[in-house]
Image (cartoon, rainbow, N blue to C red):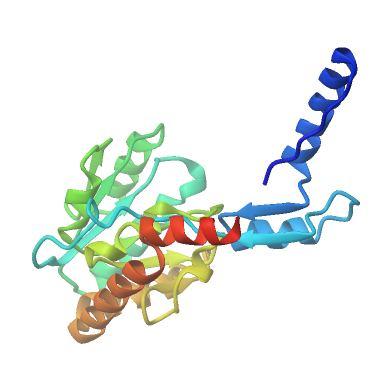
Length: 246
């Protein structure tokens, strides 16, 4: 949504262009957001420079790259993300320990690197679950990894519109996520994804227990998530929605 200005004086033109560029970048009349939470925040800002119209065009996923590749492995759980304090993988380790106490058979694969790897591996040993969770480090083959697990666990204290919660769906991989950022806006809780409060480890245990033990619920969620991704998060839909706004 461009803004143009012209001046006779080169110096004045340059000065005004710089000012208008800054204003149009920060406070345009119309603004496109890729997140519902960002659009809501912009409308609640107590300032004159507030977008008159806000449009939401959510991220898209390459369905050719992220697609089902055979039957997933029952009891295999994937986690993807940097090993940083904000991603709260220590919560996942405590949940893993609780699930093992229930007698459930499963394994967890984590893809991602970060400064907390040694600390988390030591924590896993201290909880006696080091044989259950495997830290893979940085991986460039995430689409292939998503084709294998029964479901993905996404944990974080702060998020926008996380691709880590979007990309599993077209692969037929169910998702258990936290109620941060736009995750609650993506899908219906209990239908295409399980959502829980980010600090509620008991809820996370219960939701993961359902997907590990109830194959019918797991199958329905996989199919609903894949259909939702194809209808609302394809790259074609992203382009179409963007063109519609303009």
